[in-house]
Amino acid sequence: MLVGNIAINKKKLKRKTLLIIAVIFGMAAIVVYGYYSWNRKLALASNQKPDLIVNAIVLCEEFTSNEAEANKKYLGKILEVNGSIVSLNNLGDSVLTINLGSQEALSSVSCELDNRLSPILGNYKVGDSLIIVGTCTGYLADVEISNAAIITEKNNK
Amino acid sequence: MKNFLAIIVCFTLLTNAAFAQSKLFTKNGVISFKSKTAIQDIEAVNNKALSVWNLSTGKIEFSVLIKGFQFEKALMQEHFNENYMESSKYPKAVFTGIVQNMQPLEGNVNKEFVTKVIGTLNMHGITKPVTALTKITVKNGVVSGIADFFILASDYDIKIPSVVANKVNNRIDIRINVAAYQPLNSK
Image (cartoon, rainbow over all chains, first blue to last red; front, top):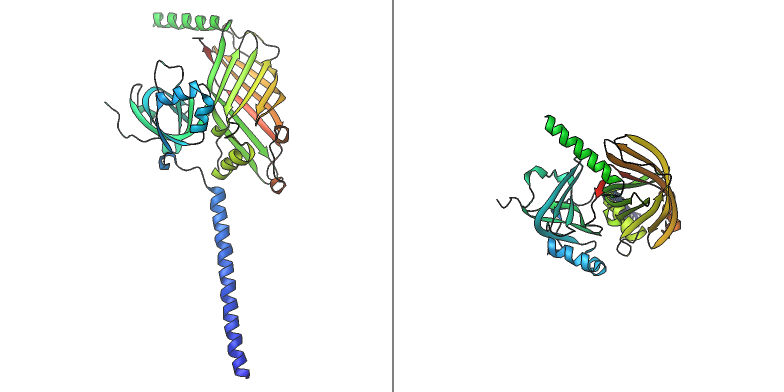
């Protein structure tokens, strides 16, 4: 009788210990997950998958003709924009912008590049064809794309 | 070299003459804000603010896209857009005001003066009055400015859950910084 009880108690203790270890691991996993979630930085622009593919001139026309409709379609989405470079801007090395679209239009697509990717603006010039992926943040004087990355390797020349 | 200098002088005089009747603008205004608490500071920056300043009427305007504010942590940026600012519903914030006690900016004189901009801020669907302390600088023909003010998130119907009340301050300090205004040529 006594021996039987000891055997059962040992089993119970083993199960309890395993349960405690499982709970501790579970809590540790939650803490680690929480830490990484909290400290996560914005996804590298080059790793983003586009929701929509659009031409820069067409995108500008949609926003200038009906901003509300264009916002419904594009605001907050990851866009792959193709177009011709109308200007390049380098403000103190930390804010790098490439504008795509048409020289004749009042507005262009202004893409603020993710500077973690160290893009070299010097590699590109006005008139080059380019494809850029980034998040559409809306429209001010230009269609604005943020956290953008250039996804064509070569220029068309 | 002499000809080159002559051209530079003429160009500078022409651009200064243009100030008197024209507007100034920039697409690269920097707007940053900060929430300070004992537990954490929350900061974000937007490098693409649009500003138009009509020198004859004194009216100055800043527009900024909420989704363009960049945070260090992605989670903060997502919460800011989805929970606090509802930026898909209210994509822009616009500050409009009149610069007080304006001094002439043209002429080849470097100057710096402090004044106020009295106006309104439209954000999250709500418009409230704002007065910003502003420093305007003219150096080598370039006009720049820094404006500071603070807002209460609750004034703009931005709800800070009580759970995070000790981490997110209802008072948000805002700074607008324009490094260089360009003359606006109306088309």
